[in-house]
Image (cartoon, rainbow, N blue to C red; front, side, top):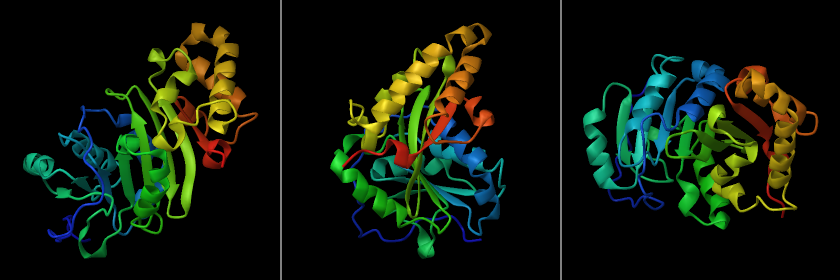
Length: 271
C-alpha cells in the first residue's frame, strides 16, 4: 500500500476559499459513525483505504478522529487532512503519525501518485458558497474518487448535535441523511437549519425537502404517545410511519442511532 503523503505541487494554486475554521472535538462523530457502519464493507475490500478530511479547520481534531474511527474497521486505513490555509496545515503537522498526514489544497484534493480516495468527507465547507456553485464542486470532488468511492458533504452545528449530509458516488448524489441527538430535538424540522447548501434554500413550500420535513413533523407529532418510552422510541415510530410515503434507506439499526436516510431523488431541488 502506498504511503500516505500529499502530492508535491507547491506551485499549484489550491481551488476554493478558506472556511472560518471553526471546529470542536467529536463534532463529526455522527457522520463518522454512519460512514464506518454503512460503508464498512467498502472500507474492508478497498485496495487503497485512504480517506480525505477536506477543510478540517483551524485544529486537526476531526482528521485525527476520522483515522481512529476508520481503523476500528480497517487497521491500515489512512487519512489525509486537506486545508487551503497554509498556517492551518503547519499547525496540524505535529499531529502527523502513521497513516495520518496533512496537506495544503482545496477541491483538487492533492494526493500523491494519482491516488484516489475511498472517502472524501467535506463537512461545513460549502456553507459559504452560493447554491449555484455546489454542482460544480460536487463534480470536481466526485471526479477524484476511487471507482467505489464516496463523497460525504454536509453541515452540522458547533458541537455535532444536529447534522445533515448528502452521500455521492462517482455517478452523482445518492442519499440524504438527517441525524440528531434526540434528547435535544423539539421536532424533526429543527434539522432544517443544518441542511447542506444544495438544499437549505429549498426548504420552502413546493420543494420536496420542505414536504419531507413537514411529513416528518406530522409523523413525529403522531408518535407523541411513545415519548413516555423515550425520544428514541418516538423517533423510531415516526420514521417507521414516514417510510410509508418516502423512499427511506436502511432500517431500525440506523434509526436507533437518531438517523434517517432518504433517497436523493425524493428530496432533490426542483428545476
